[in-house]
Image (cartoon, rainbow, N blue to C red; front, side):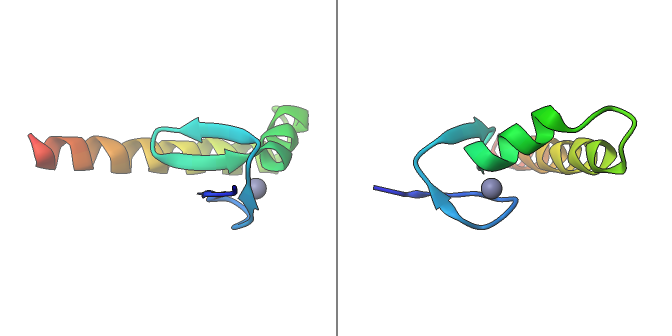
Length: 64
Ligand SMILES: [Zn+2]
């Protein structure tokens, strides 16, 4: 079963990681790992992760 939808590429996948409540498929995870720190993609990923993190914190604060 593929209940997980990757937040990056939108594909359903069984293999991947959960970043907070967001699923990241194995392919995208591998892409991040391969991306060097000097590449723009890396900055993009950091930004996405931060946005997800902020969103999660806001949701958490709202619930409490
Ligand atoms: Zn993906």
